[in-house]
Image 1 (spheres, rainbow, N blue to C red):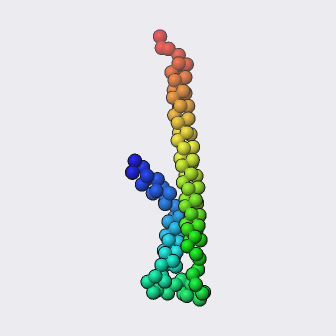
Image 2: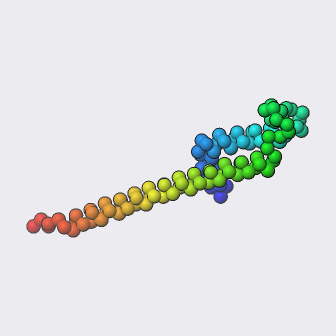
Image 3: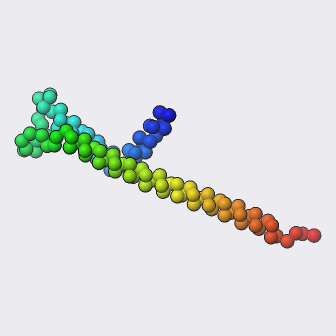
Length: 110
């Protein structure tokens, strides 16, 4: 059960856009939210802004947008693989049908 969940998480994080944007948002958001706790420059000060760049809820919303994109990509990839499987199953069935019909229509040697 756990391996199935890990496999699903790997499939969600497979697209490069999800990995890079999600990682960047997590790092920048964590820096922005926690920098004042440790006496570091806040991201707003680095960029010349006053205060924080975004509130905590906005960082969470951005991460959710990346996860929603990942789910759409996962669904798109899984639907393409199921179409390929259906097509290959149809091809096998057609070949088997043709072979069976060919065996029945061959003239019998006497």
